Length: 570
Image 1 (cartoon, one colour):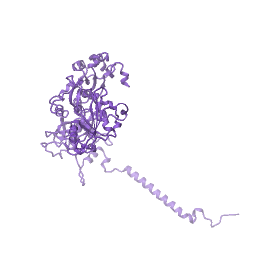
Image 2 (cartoon, helix red, strand yellow):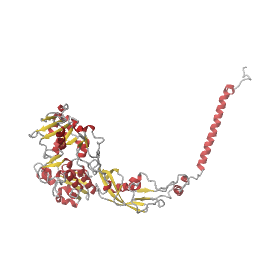
Image 3 (cartoon, one colour):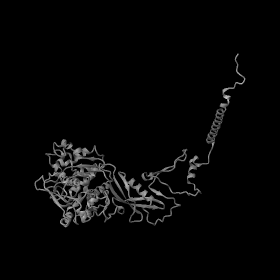
Image 4 (cartoon, helix red, strand yellow):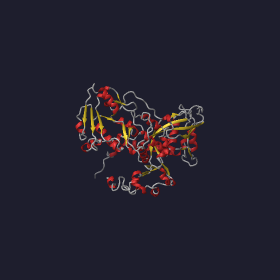
């Protein structure tokens, strides 16, 4: 019979396994101690009541937050405001924390207050407009007051004429409407200081805060950022400010003889584009400007133009109108290389022989700009004859040239002086109005081309059409070529109507526009002509919250006459 030997030992008690067994035993003991410790900490945390007031009732929270510490960093009792203070008129105190018994009230505030214990300002001293609290209060009140505009940015407040007044500027655009771009306003704020409480008493009218207006600076040095090779120096700042800022549309000047002779020039002479409609003028002028850019030459332009009789009160073509009356020359001269022809010819006569400047004449509009790229002459002159329409400037850009020379429409903007009138009228309406464009005049009298226009734009027809488009009682700006605004008198029973003629004080003899344009015109007064009126009307129309067009909304007649609707839509 086989049996186990006496010396037999179990596998686990073998000497080679004793080390492993000891390690397992120690690990089990450590795990047991950790679990027991964690359990004890959990029990203590669940049952312990600390002295930290943040774990106490709302009353103790208030006591803790308002207590004065004896630490090195002393407490500050003034209110620390956050970004919400800029946008909201309401402030909410600390509400209930863990209990519904101590809810704080929400109050509407129109002022900022400093603790009386730290208010040591002499009420007789002038207000510090640069104080952040004053700046913050002015921004808040502007946002509250003008709800229908989008603020782009605010300028730093400046002291007004009185100790309790501050002037502040801002850039803005209407929240609604099709127009883009920003305008600038600067207004005077009257601020009351009652002990330590500041409050805005009143905000002035449009452009009342003249101390916040950007001052025109003369720069005798070359403008940084201007095309280095142009050799032209402007006498003012190099910027593209919004309407409402100082306008610097002085003519560019040549730095030196060296600068003049190292440039290449292009000029258009003659032609029948003069005294045509403004659309015709721009179509031709931009062709010349586009070719100058293509050839990398400075365009020599005539700063004066002839205003067509369709825009004048005399019903006659009027020479001597300044380009700057109608368009933003400051933007043009900064974005393109241009020079007034009067100055150019003076310098040409002065230096042409001395420096052997050469002239290349082109008398056929069909000569492509591509053929002129290799011309090395100082001046290329395109001369136009007397036979219309072959002597129109825009003929240069027709045909194959159209794919090479692009008209730079982005360089043409309406005069900032006219745009400032738009901003002034829009501000008087608080930018909260609807607009209607009503075309009448010659078109309404021409029943062959527009058979229904006169009837469709009569007061009765307008009331019937607008009742489903514009709410009763709304402010309505009417842009129209109808000479007698009394024609629209019946609309006043349903709407508050506004016309351009309601704001003649903006361009009369006492206005800033009148004095500025007279300076450009050698001191002679400038008429606020029909083209200017149409420009302002169009911009105000685009800024209405709702825009009602004549040929899209008021009549079924075609904009360009009978049977042209489909053509116009293509």
